[in-house]
Length: 288
Image (cartoon, rainbow, N blue to C red):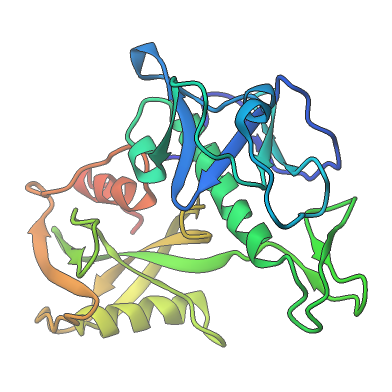
């Protein structure tokens, strides 16, 4: 999956350090990130030195004058977010690219860094002011947290729990497609956990809401951080309980149907928990 790095891990411990010119700078523009495509399909972020050449000053000041925010270390390299407006790069080798497009490149390490950094970028930009008293927040020097110097409000990164659900009926798997989205590939049932709800209750509710089916024998599979949406996904396999007649929620899904284990229309892309779970079912290795 996307978070399975070539070697090592994403070292997400926070450090209050200054950027070096050789560190990587992640520049975000909506859902686009600044990258340089190289030969053999490789993709690289600009260095801090590169970003300084064309970065423009913002009208508002963030927490520090330099506007580079440390986010994590990956494979012996430090990554920083540029919190201002990077503008258009003066180097033609760089261009803004959609995160979704980066997912399908060979350099998945880069894409995982991009998704995680975008998650943090959105959180930082959304918490420049205290939600209680509207005072500008300051970054803590010991951990990844912003705080209000006036009322003491502490704000930590927002992570939303969500479920991916493989509903099975013997050698059949339920696959669906989302309604009204650019993403048109087959997927499993999915949804976010609501307030006051257990993860298991989320599984039952989402399946009933989206396809009108009851399920039983829930088996946890594994999880995946999903920075595109600021979520952590939890995968479950479960069995159909009762009727297999689908009652589609057309506001959420364009279609849903049962597919035989030996003729599935979707396969593992090496990126998502959803596609890995489809492969596990296809190979008959789903948890019993």
